[in-house]
Image 1 (cartoon, rainbow, N blue to C red):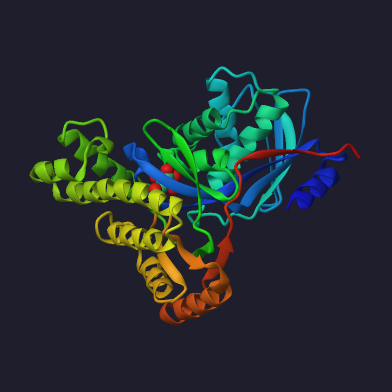
Image 2: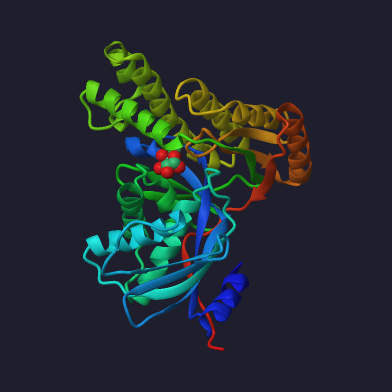
Length: 381
Ligand code: GLA
């Protein structure tokens, strides 16, 4: 991937790039729909990423070619306006957020490509935002601050692109450490790097289904959670534990009650999962993943028939510790925690079972925990 963007850059821009920025996609091990409730999440950056080969310009223009879309965008930093291909809006959004922050930024030209599948719930858009932010930081001689940049990229997504997401995707893409998942306390933004249990691998199980309406359903769920918090007189559901919820349940409407139950139990499960990982207890981590899936399916209602089928087939394999949908839901990917020695057989058998049940050929592959956003300087040719 790095060579591909480097070579295409040379061809398109008639000279070598000075560096390559890489920002990874992610899976979420547990802690779903908790980030915008100031709760706990435990995502892991994966070895699939967005790559941009680039060099600075002497003016305020940004010119980017996407190999995957075979399209080029060009815009000026002193007159940012919406319009053009959707992927370009993520780059413009980052420029907008940096400018709004009062940061003077410079123009650049670049070539990008990625292998994070789009629309699959693996955060290809956060990866693109962070890769673009890494480029802006370099050409503008800004010091690299993963936390601050993740918050800026979230702002770009919320206010320029118009998706009301939480902080999880941007923060894990920027701040992950190789070999580890990342526990994020979404209230204090405190981070802890947690290793996977020895001898286990996370397998991505792409159902190959993509749903429309994800954004409106997402906003609806978010609205129900906020309503539940308001009714109980707190700023966010983070302030409520199981006992307090039991006590106030009657004051909530049905949807708010079901959503709140999920979020509050999921926060507790996420902390338990971290404990299980610290003790190398793959069995317990797997069971918590299974419970999380059931809660997302029945309480938060963001799973689909295909995701449920995939998870059931995965859990029936002797080598599987546990499985769940990952990301916002409504299609996309599930993940499974699998014994390392049995990964090939697991992928083969689950793919076969899923295709027989649904008629859809899925995509299954192991992923390894990757480091966060990085800059790779290139040697002068
Ligand atoms: C999407 C959002 C995240 C998070 C998850 C659900 O990935 O971008 O902020 O809310 O959904 O856990």
